Image (cartoon, rainbow, N blue to C red; front, side, top):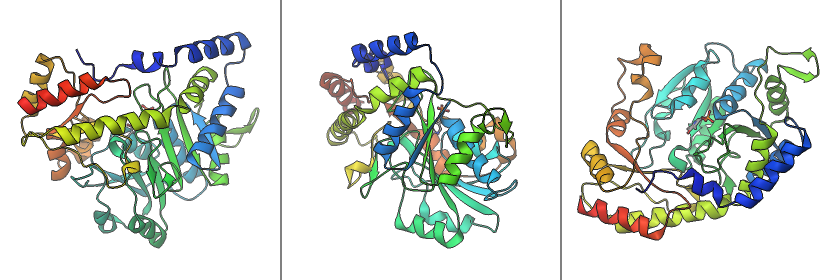
Length: 366
Ligand SMILES: *Cc1c(COP(=O)(O)O)cnc(C)c1O
């Protein structure tokens, strides 16, 4: 069976380095807010090009904390609107509604699966305070037009960079394009921890300071609480593992590009719609390789019978979820069509060329 993602194999690439580091952290007796976190934060900010990186407990917290900090800073307040793509993973939207802000959904572009920037302006009202862009499947969404819109309407641009670490737009890394970015290091992401982990990057010192306090019970100084904060820490074990794996992220993303290129050049079945390979290949880090077909269930069953595991990202659009009952009658036809047709093929830095060939051959025979 070709697994959708072989996490064991991915992490065993660095077995000696990770195991000796974990033993070192174990023996040190220091497990939270120590040197490992400080090193990782420094190396992550250096990699992204931002002045600050803040380790937090997970990707959802990273996004929640950015918005919560804007509320504490008086930049946003309850009932304000934040624009977000209608076909994202639910976490992007939860981060907004959890803060008492209103998510305003905008349809994606079917060539990139990212938000259609030309449809943003019509959704801007006097209550709009931010645009949460999601670099979905690992592909950057950004443009001069988006920058100009944000400047014209005084909107914060927040990046959900959970899926696109390492991608670049005109020489700037994702995570350094807007005002702040949230990262997830969930084990299956391109940079994955051995459990939950996340981070925020920003060049805004006041925002960074507010987030650090919010993530630490609302405190900058022990036992003095300025906000009703939360506890969202990146622990030393995870920080140490991430610091090791960060050194290899560019190499791993290059392997992902190589596999994506093979799929795109060699899959030629007219029943299958392939993703676009961007003109500037640095804009994509291929977190997921997502195809579309009208016969998705049949194709998925055929691939399983032939030893290939696939997944669907995502089967139900956010506006059709029970969690957002009030949106269930809304219509987002492009998102709905995407959710009915997408299928993610296995793509990872540890796949063998023969495995890639087998998948290509099976798809061409379907
Ligand atoms: C994974 C993911 C998140 C959430 O990250 P967690 O670490 O699981 O909380 C947010 N947004 C997107 C687009 C994701 O893929």
